Length: 235
Ligand code: ATP
Image (cartoon, rainbow, N blue to C red; front, side, top):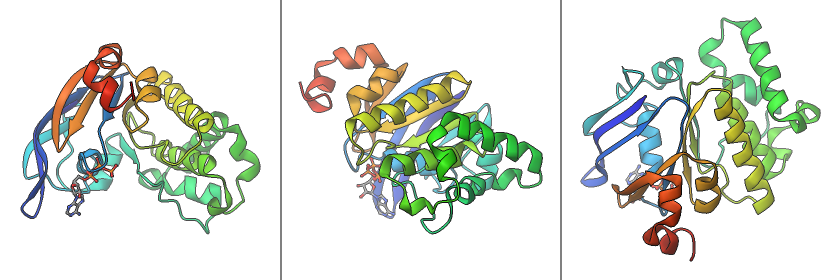
């Protein structure tokens, strides 16, 4: 499982995460709700080894993730699809996807198989494989970003705001893809502002406010919680 224990992250004197605790069990989709600036991306960057914590620990299947070596984390099964997609717009869809396989660069045959799996998950990508990624719609670019993360063959996928800026129908498609990936055995930690849609596919969730976990529960419990309903579900 993913075990985050008393994890703190500072930027200079500013504490972005205050000793947070959370878990993701194998096979789970866990949603992280929180407003802009709550610390979701900071947590993801820390779990990816891009940001060193100032205290606490994070492990996936017992392997420490806080050593500050992103390639180590990816090769131990943790792959991030970052907020804002961060594709290489001039490169083709397929080249963007292949970049995700960097840690498996010596396994050409395996990477071809993974590429086919990504195209099975996102059939609309097949016709676009040679198109520059930047020429695709926002939703399609999000699929490419998720596909690129999958090329690393994760057992834990960190999905940071995948529905940002997308139309409601496209949000549903992206979250349905997350559910399909999970059904194939990948655990998912999902940061989302789109709380209702995210809770609809999640098993459990946490609410992060100003760098602290203020609420946690099953997706159903969170959906029924008055604080969640007023702050994140608009009811
Ligand atoms: P968003 O969805 O807007 O990215 P978030 O929940 O992911 O929000 P973070 O990006 O993790 O939030 O930011 C948490 C806090 O840390 C914010 O107050 C932000 O201003 C601050 N912060 C983030 N990165 C840095 C940095 N490199 N230096 C200083 N402060 C930072």
